[in-house]
Image (cartoon, rainbow, N blue to C red; front, top):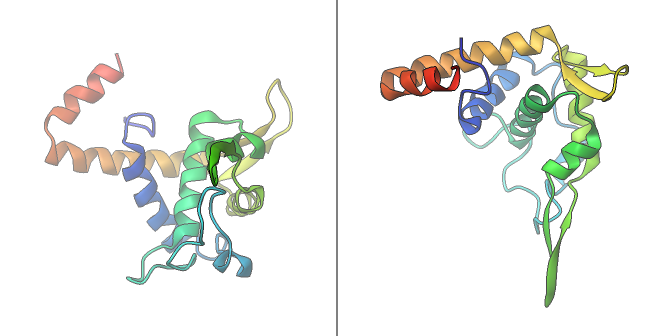
Length: 170
């Protein structure tokens, strides 16, 4: 059975964002300030489309970021806000001086993690060597189900995908 480790990340995040938008819309929704914030320190402006839904009626950037964070927690959990800030950072331009790396904004990450906890997809791990958020059984089954759907679609389109997965699981 394929998991999130075996599927291309972009395909998984796109499909997971649609599921979060359609099924978890009551728990995961962008706050009012999300319409005005930049998503990364190296961006000059906020996104062109709103956070709740794009112009075609699909999920907005808030749901894509939530899906991406859920995938990162699945792959690297237990993981905290600080490490996720590093993952979502970027090189900030400083005019004529060389750019410097800046961490991402913690308010967006923290709010999404709290919403994912409320939806029951993520929980806090307070004991052990590493503390942070981990995926719950419900979240793991959701991601694995979506990964299996994507794998079956890719297997129809790309027959060599089956051999690729077999080599990965050896």
